Image (tube, rainbow, N blue to C red; front, side, top):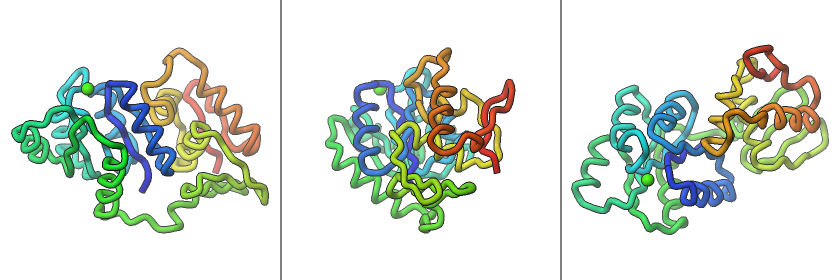
Length: 222
Ligand code: CA
């Protein structure tokens, strides 16, 4: 119950929210425009969406309607500068669970997120907070990794990358998918950052944990 998608085109605000959420143990991804927000929300297993209304591409309400239309039922909190009652009504009618206006305090956003996650039907058990493969164990609550008997601290991006693989064991993940999920919009699509980070994980967690699937991407070996 800890993956949050932040649909926000203002990078300063997105980074502010991301930093706060990560320091509270959430996993986050950022979508900087309407199209990637829709794609990421539909293609991944997020538990909650923070949605700005003024997004490049489409209005946030259209994004929300599309997601609800496709059966996505995770909680959505609209976070916007628009504070008209009409906008709020439209937001709730489009399927939002909550509505917070900018400027906002992070504490208030956090309280609302926690309330929404508590209410949402999926109550995550301890088992779901522990992901295992071979002798590598990811504890999503403490965000620590155990390799055999040794406990390792991973930087945030490496942990998120590891978590992404562990949530999809045996499944080929393309570089684009990994960039989307781990880096959000915050990357240069031509960069080799995924390869570099997979290298870090191999070094720290075991060289044969993640295999290269030529021309397609990477896969967590089962
Ligand atoms: Ca905006």
